[in-house]
Length: 294
Image (cartoon, rainbow, N blue to C red; front, side, top):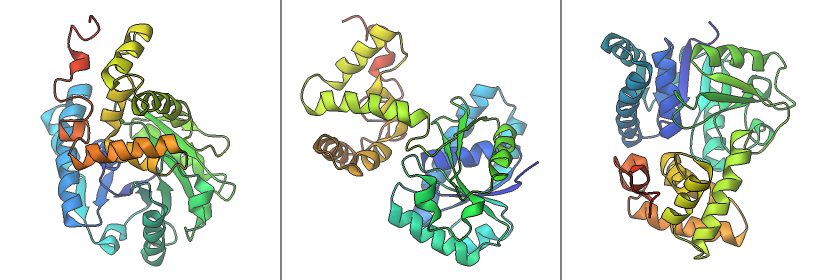
């Protein structure tokens, strides 16, 4: 095996999913959180992923119990990094937050420890300048519900050791992912380079009062046969991520979207995770039999 002792820095939606799938696949995994309340949220997320993964793979209760034994939680970074050989940073899309983590990581971590970022918007080379070992650093990006949408995009920078991506190809297979090697640095990798413009076109229609989210989704679903539309996808991604992506942009349309999404977050309309977003869960309107009929 490649990496055995894995630390996930950040237990948000994707961080907790990466942690769980790694633990489910036999890795020793620690979720490091910046505060106790964030770890409690991570534990609640993992409890949901347990059920989803068990249903998807038809896993036995014993397999789920084994995965649970492989997973620990801490706010003590020195403790988390003690035996680590791989760290995957999955913190919020804030350059200041990531920079602060990389600086602390560099002061504590053994020089052999490899580090990757799960950033969905920032280039490897933009982050590598804050890392004390750029040759052992790359970006490693996943799609939501990673046990099902199981691509793992691997994006090195010019400073990354040319041998390093191959270890992530192997690690991806070990945790049941399909590795996708990115030949050149690209904001958004492959997936988000296609997905974000699609979501942007939908939110532009919404904030300019062209159509309501449900009607936009309905139009897309009827015309393409897709199982969900862009606003349902945003509910799955989560409003915090949607907000961060739009708030980071300079154009007026994105800022309008960010303001409207912020209002939803303030109202606890986070998406699937909170039970409400553009739709209500667990039985959203777009999954009902008559949604596409009128």
